[in-house]
Image (cartoon, rainbow, N blue to C red; front, side):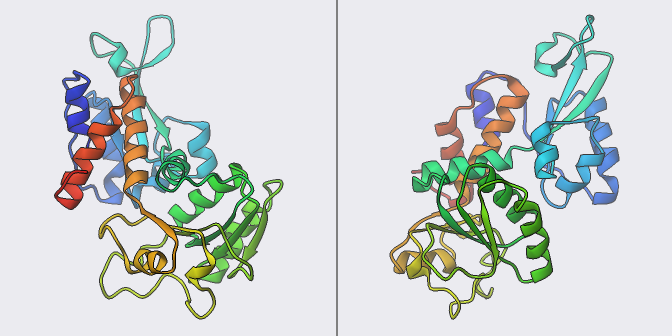
Amino acid sequence: MHNPAMAALGLNWRYLAFEVHPDNLRSAIAGAKAMNFVGLNLTVPHKLLALDLVDVVDDAARKWGAVNTIRFEGKTVDGQWQPLHAFAEPPKELRAHGFNTDADAITRALREDLGFEPEGKRVLLLGAGGAGRVAALKLAEAGVAELHLVNRTTSKADQLAGELRAVPGVRVNVGYPKNDVDLVLNATSLGLKTDDASPFDAKAFSLSRARAAYDMIYRPAETPFLRGAAEAGCKTANGLGMLLYQGAKALELWSGKIAPISIMREALMKNVYGAAI
């Protein structure tokens, strides 16, 4: 999605994918900085590791505990740090600045794809790992009234619940809700494979008790979880929007330009599903 967006913005840039072993992440970041890359995106398992490998961490990235975007910056003659797009020639002094664009992408995707506004809502969150933690903290910050956490390892859900209880105004429960919810959000990887188990216990909770369902998985386009939610009458959406919006924000951080969302969405649809909408 980035390459057609960069072309549309008139940027003489190229977005490339590299497989990097976690043991080599420090060297990869240093190498990209030395070669005057404008920035990097990081995916699992690098997001947590990168917190300690960049020169400066954005407040939001520190809050969410993960870095998924790095912007390389140069020092101006008057001592200010600026993105590399602001320099006609590569600067002598460089630094790596870590950001997190995932958190804002979650709430934007929920809002634009489901019409879901978090404030005052009740949410059942499936998964308390890296993605689930960011989603829970962002939803709590956005003003949800209740968060119900379900995770295969209960101790991890308990740990996350402890963090969330520090956020004023949010009732946090580990386990399935007794009442209806406004949203069920799957932040687990269950559904990526056709023979995966369900991400939730159908005996403990029925999707007919939810108004909407969101799955962070975007391939396949409709997981068994989303199919069951649609059959139960829920409004549904998959994680393609979240992928789109975190990528758009990263491009804006690197370029200082407004990302062409429609072009990026079309490219994603063609790449992921082989068709445009």
